[in-house]
Image (cartoon, rainbow, N blue to C red; front, side):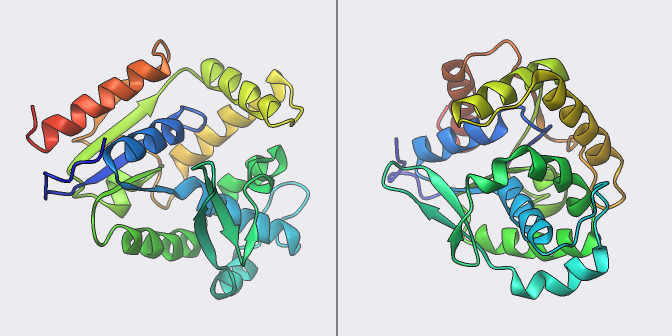
Length: 236
């Protein structure tokens, strides 16, 4: 459902906890209204994968902030649309979409994301993506740091147990074996790290719409977001 008759293009920021379904709903909304979609979590995962490949993260998940900061100019992240319409993450010319979704990357992404230089570097890229507006972006700090003036902000939440169940199902659909206990521990750990990091911690923007989607189907989510979007652009 493109909006060619509506010249006003806005920025839509969708923030929330890991495995809350924000990427799924952001992709769906962008597709429905003809907007560009950016998965900022994939960008942090790509930097994490690069750091892991280059020995910048120890076995106890400690990230070498100095080495990673020095490497940032050598890390090129882009997105490519596949023939089936899905969006893949490209790291230095390589399609790494499957690799960045692995559990070992999930276990290391929070400490890498907490490095101020990494956040500053990626925030600049994210702001450049949205310079022409007409974008749906999801992450942890879109409505608070990347686009604090976004016209529509949504904060997605659900209990950790519910999010862990969703994550296990998603991983198994991709052929990745992971136990519920392992995934739940990762979700709880990432929640804590995201909420307590010094640089751009995860929090709901004061003007964000709070959405607990634990009891919603995907069609219900889609309808809820379309309704919000239409209200913001004055179509309702």
